[in-house]
Length: 327
Image 1 (cartoon, one colour):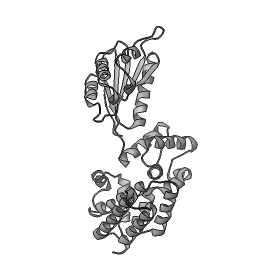
Image 2 (tube, helix red, strand yellow; image 1 turned 135 degrees about the vertical axis):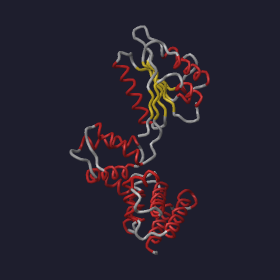
Image 3 (cartoon, one colour; image 1 turned 180 degrees about the vertical axis):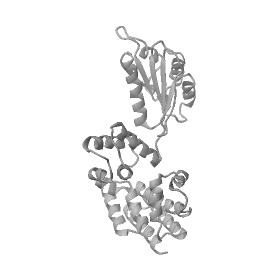
Image 4 (cartoon, helix red, strand yellow; image 1 turned 120 degrees about the horizontal axis):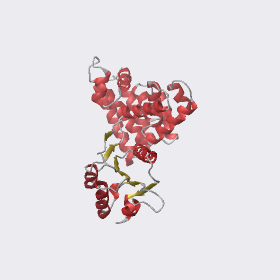
């Protein structure tokens, strides 16, 4: 996973800045930091949202009470802090009270960037968790989830789980925990299918795979099922576009190029490259162009130009299959 960390500067106080917009990973990082502080004898956690603070609040939040020692203070969403509060927060991070454990989260974008620069430059421990967008990174996350449970998942199980659940990391983590608790042995495609068969078969990628393989009846069946269970038409057109583009890009490369090298070049996992190479039969550059044109027309229809997204997607699926088989 794309996580960058830097160790804290030495000193009595412990200040950590957790940045990024992958919410689950940010939450887990905050939980680890506060748990570690509690193990070291810190008092209870005081958590606040920066956007709700007014000048002077930080002083009371980080001060010891009559009965407790200095607490663990968690300030979330520092990018939402007002100007005066941002100034107070930067000063606090640069010179915190003795024994204070301070954890600050920031989305990491342009908003509040000046404050983030000051926070990360103050000698704090920094961890960065950007949004996980690449399939390979999601696969790595899933492997780590099962490894933490003392379990293993093979490539077939990984593909099936991603096909079923998409990109929502929180939902993926929940599924991994459930599978780890409810199954035994190696987790493979069959294991995942028992739990998520309907969702896996309804995914946009399942529709796209069958379309580029020329399996019209199955592609239409999966398309109708996907729409019936609420898969967004926009996600289906995106999957169709990705499937056809990969056919074109992989088809334009040498078969002798290793899948791992090509995967790095195209931003897809090696297993996906191997699968696309198996799907290339029947495709020509002209056919790919025709298929992409059909997908672009469907995309415009489902985004507002047409009254029936389902019909537009069916037309696109038929056009993709025809583009493959007509050459």
